Amino acid sequence: MKNYTTVNEALTQTQQVAMHEQQRYRELFTFAPDGYLVTDSMGHPRGQPGCSYSTHVVPDQLAGIPLAVFVAPEARQGFRRR
Image (cartoon, rainbow, N blue to C red; front, side):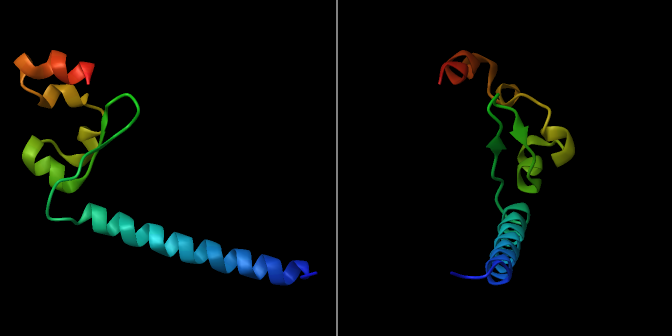
C-alpha cells in the first residue's frame, strides 16, 4: 500500500499539471485572432476579446448582454426557439 505522502505528492503534481494546462487553454482562447463566443446556460455571453471586435462591446460588458441582442430582430424568434 502506498503511503499517504507518496499519494499526496502525486496528487499535488497532477493538480499543478492541470492548472498549467487550464492556464494554457485560457490564454489560447483569450488571445485567439478569431472571436469565440461561449454562453452560460441562460444564453448570456461570457466575454472573449475577439468577440468584442465584432460586437463592438468590451469583453467585461459583453458578459451581461443576452446573446439575442446580437441577432437580427426578424430572426430572434427562431433563434430563441433553437
